[in-house]
Amino acid sequence: MKFFLSLFIVLFLLSCSHKGKFHESVLKRYNSPVKTHSTDASWAKYKRRVLTPYRVAQAKRFMRKYHDELERAERVYGVDKEVVVAFLSIESSFCSYTGNYSVYDVLWTLAYHKNRKQKFFRHEFEELLKLAKEEGKDPHSYRGSFAGAMGCVQQLPSVHRRYGVDFDGDGVKDLYSIVDSIGAISYFMQRHGWKKGAKIAVKTTYKGHNYSGLPTGFNKIYDLKTLKQNGIISKSRVHEDRVSLLQLRDTYHDELWLGLKNMRVLTAYNNSTNYGMSIFKLSQMIRKRGQTPL
Image 1: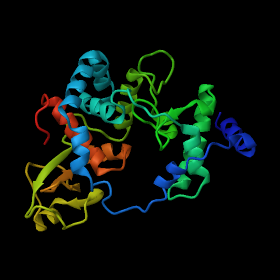
Image 2: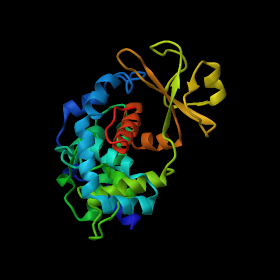
Image 3: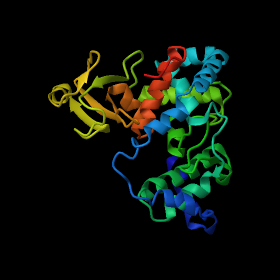
Image 4: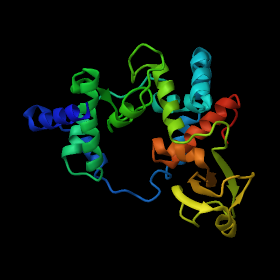
């Protein structure tokens, strides 16, 4: 099967029909310089958009409607249902907005025009062709985001091929099925090592208001002794030896958090401190009936 898929890709790419519509605005996003801490710079603005009472109320309604499916996913995959709901809320507002770009055109633009992630997008373009072949669809028919992500939990073609789940039992791994998406994000998290009920992040204290000490980010890993020596003290007990140091740059006072193994699962889905922390904080708000975010 893999041989025939590869042969199909080669033949398709050799034909003139593989050319897509060029998106200059999409290419521009991936030709802009990568800035240090760019994912942390706008937390104050980011949290006002995603950590809202309306979003929590919407999540509560969703949990009531899909109670049985969420409970089943939690049993099958061992992933906390509030976190699954937070994913669906932040990724697509429960499938109400999934993007209207031609995924084919977006990935073709990024695969065949120079940019900082061209190799990555060339792979995703080929994955889209494989997905279309497997599903018996026109590769031009897929719609999604400016980065080629599709469906209720905004999966790239390679992610959907690997982690897509037929959770409603209709024989189709449907990107736009809420129930299949509950299963898909739960399965992704299980495969990346999620531990149900375990802490995700722990808040710390430090001297000052705007932190400028050790390098921070979801991929900056430290042992607890090093952090303590640098004046960073956990506000609750941590049972892991090595943690990431997460900085949320707020208007008047930066927050510093220790990211635990479960946080690294969240950022495996989207490599952004803001993203991982928003999933975490929204899940806590949902669990605590919409109280002020942590």
